[in-house]
Amino acid sequence: MESNIYLNRELSWLEFNRRVLEEAQDENVPLLERVKFLAIFSSNLDEFFMVRVARLKRQIRDGIEGIGPDGLTATEALTAISRRVHELTEEQHLCFLNTILPQLTAEDIHLVRPEEMSRELGIVLQTNRISHAAFPNALLDAHEQCFVAPPGDTKVRVPGDTDRMSRK
Image (cartoon, rainbow, N blue to C red; front, top):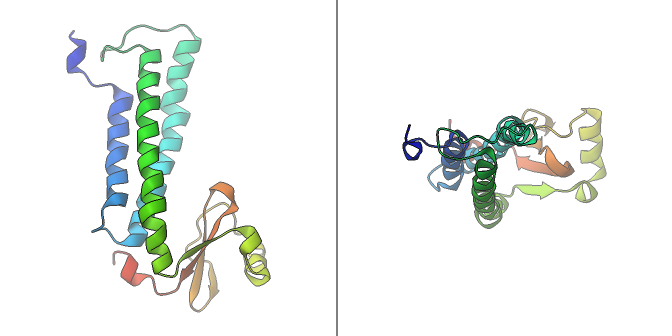
């Protein structure tokens, strides 16, 4: 069996996830859809590490270091995965910081840290037990919605008229 004709399963999966990231980078995709693609990219990576990378680490721990059909050992695969994930997450961060965040700000959508939040907004979130998950239908009033991002207690205030920023 020629190993150079087979692609590494995990590296191939990372290339699939790269295509998800490309949707977030595509200026032709509506802004809020691009935000969703960034979230999907992150969620996919979380699962990838919990399942696929964990399996490779178990193989190494258990001394199963045979060469796979792709010609890589588990250690070599992990090294290649690490390199590729670092490249992809750097692209993701740059996309968010240099493109998405300024565009959200231009649309009057702002990230709000807990210490920056008004007392009233904090009460609404606490009363409705909104934290660490996305709740797009949690109405604050007739014109605003609140989304809460999973990592780090960063909340997002979104104006009610978001139709122009998403697909119908």
